[in-house]
Length: 361
Image (cartoon, rainbow, N blue to C red; front, side, top):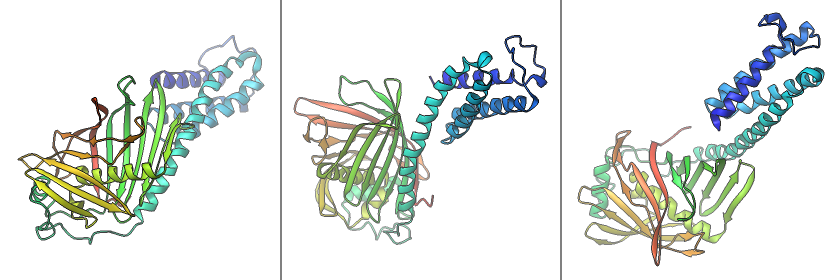
């Protein structure tokens, strides 16, 4: 569909070259109306705008719609002036205009996420700007110490924020189709914040989702074409669930943050450790599972709500395929699983594409 749209925009733009008669492409008998020199220049300009819009769209630039809107408006004005010869161009303009509206709404929706990120980047540091040392981790359970050493966190800067990019697929239940997605998120430690923006494809249609968690309060807003809300959740259950997710991100993606005093280490059973995380009067619990190499291989919490079940269910995120990334050894792939009484539902798969610590932009 994306390639078809690019072809449509370029083809529609090329047709506008026919109005630039001075270019001498060929004699176009279909153009029966005379075209004054100033109008020829406008036809050429419209062609250029359509091509620029197609290029920007092809490279996924957020503001491609600006060129598209200008091109459609000017094109339609020309069509009105030369209606007898050019009226069928209106069909293409309507199709492109619909895509422009979606492009604008996507950009505006994404801008809300970007504004929240800018606010987060202005937060003060939670940890002192220094390297993580053996002294910092001496009170942690042995499996957690081993994990921090394995990941290469010791001797590197303490982490006050991090940015993550994933690709993967999600679904509601076993009967639903998998939806491929890409995501970008920022987490901030000073005032626990998780900003997760996702772009997915549902039945061939683009869907955008924004999960926002700030200091214990959360909402999830899923929109078809970035315009129409298909799912929105907030409230106490969402706040609790996203606190679990924030703690999960700390454990799985930012090991240096496990020195956080808001974490309490409650029990150790061989390579299994129970911990709690408290923020804004909300406390969540989880078991962390490690292997003999020091890898964190699972995180299981009973505190996260399943929207489909309408109640709390055991929630797990098994991790695998550890890889070297930016000097750290981190998980490469993960799943998200709800455990129902009669089955386990794998509803998400995540592949880590990029991670940055202590971002400034």
